[in-house]
Length: 173
Image (tube, rainbow, N blue to C red; front, side, top):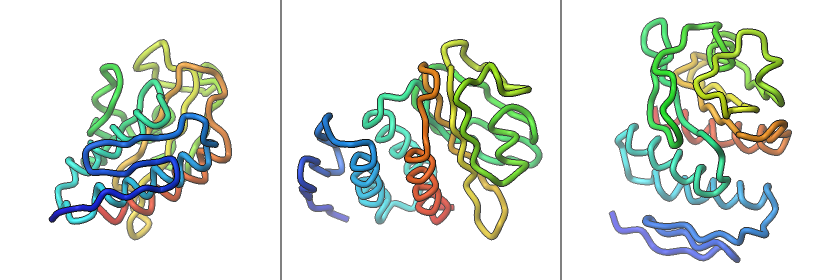
């Protein structure tokens, strides 16, 4: 399937690249990233390819320390497509931020990971985190995990737009 290049004000969307105005607001970057993600996934049935492109686009757009998916596999979250340093491979239900989001079926925003009881430190450079469960029919299929090397890097805007992304991702499963 051939896809057209589309220009959204200061944001060029193509299958191969994104060009973003670095001065755009965080909300505007998210709005445009969601449009790009929809374009990237349109017509592509392979889950791993789609999740890989989503993580790459998010990492490039927001310059986060780490972004990736953990996919539910029986009674564990197993590392899926990601961008960033080497990560924990398996996480138990209810353990760490990811396992807690899985168990609660709720997004979790952590301004300072050292203050989250039971935090799993896959990398000591990670200082704040947001985790969004990916739900389908009220069942968690995966979690989106985003880490920053800055304290208090995430806010309500991140939560709002990453939860909108969750709707796009859940439809891919």
